[in-house]
Length: 169
Image (cartoon, rainbow, N blue to C red; front, top):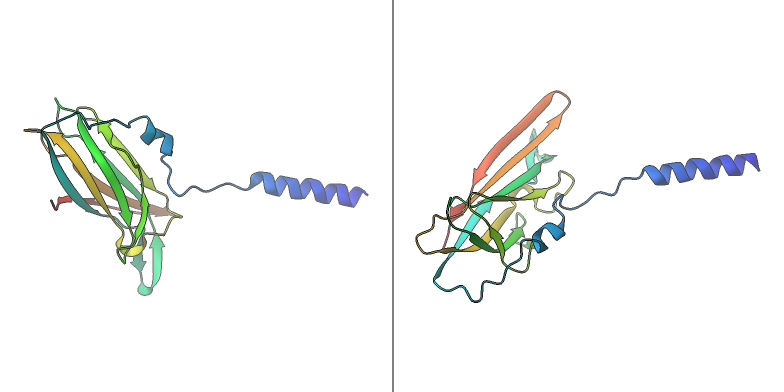
């Protein structure tokens, strides 16, 4: 009986220590707090930006990869105007749609930044993952800036690099 009881305690302890991993560290509730209806806002200019990101990079050969954390910044570069990001679509190396981060437009106040984090364990994007952002800004407003910072650490080694979005429309 003691052995069964002890086994049960050990089992419960192991199950209690299991950590649930998320796909993205940014809670979807953060996007719902930023949602805005822009249907009544006229004279907004439309744009589309491409951003390369990397969930993994090759290490020593094409058969060995190293996982990375990708931090994607959505930045309002205007110090006067609010801007609107309509969509943030994430694609994998093969161009297959992986996920959409929000389904309704969100706002970014002057000089404000929002972030998307792709956790190191999420390798769904692969070595050539990327984003397409759609956005609207008031006429005469500066364009938003989309940047990626990829990093990883192992032991005493660290690696990081950045990418910057490019307007495609």
